Image 1 (spheres, rainbow, N blue to C red):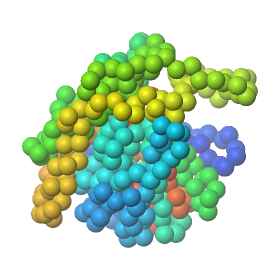
Image 2: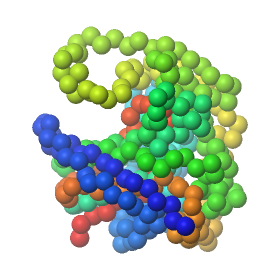
Image 3: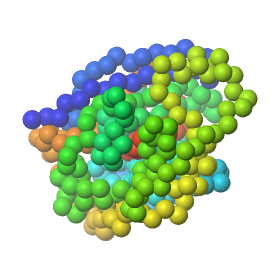
Length: 323
């Protein structure tokens, strides 16, 4: 039985305009990712193994790098993560193998290309309940933000929302017994009743943050975020709270396992092929969805980020480029 999920996306185009477009919602079988990325930029391919533990890498004209915001509010270079199941993420941070709200993955192409869709993995319909932070009155979807630009000018922004519930068993543990459920759980940021909580191995460290909104045009702000659930937070203050929190003892075990497997190319190939089989025959979701642009967007740079919220983290599986 194939895992089936909906995928939805919204698009804002233009560097300074407010024109919005919405992609048509579609049903996608999880197994489609392997067919869609055949002959495309597939970050799960073994060629991108060179990116594991690097701060920057270039494979077939595609250059990857990452940044993380520190407690002082400044961003610095971060270490890339890679595996043949999920693709590219960022090491460290709240999740040791994915892109967290304080991290960015930057993808630079050798020349402008017509991007038609982006494939994401590990994007779910909220992991909140898993961490004791279920949103009151409903669920909150994990969100990935993809900003596309060409020659330094904004071309489009794609927002993807997870629409598959977090399974009781982790997909990666189905692929290999080497992986552990919650093996990369370091710390989680949660919002409940206006209070921001950071969950770690030692329990909770909480703080009610009330950042200043001086200088913000209230009417304009209300129009932009009308009807949306939003939180205002100065991320440097939030990150200062996280800094020094005791982490789970198993907080980096899955990333370590990939590094051990990476010593043998046969081991990596086995992970990749087993993942393909399970996508076709299994019923455990890996949170894999595609964001199809309403029309191809010419871009040479893509920046992947996660908005602040409950358990926003994901990996980047690949890009589809019009030939």
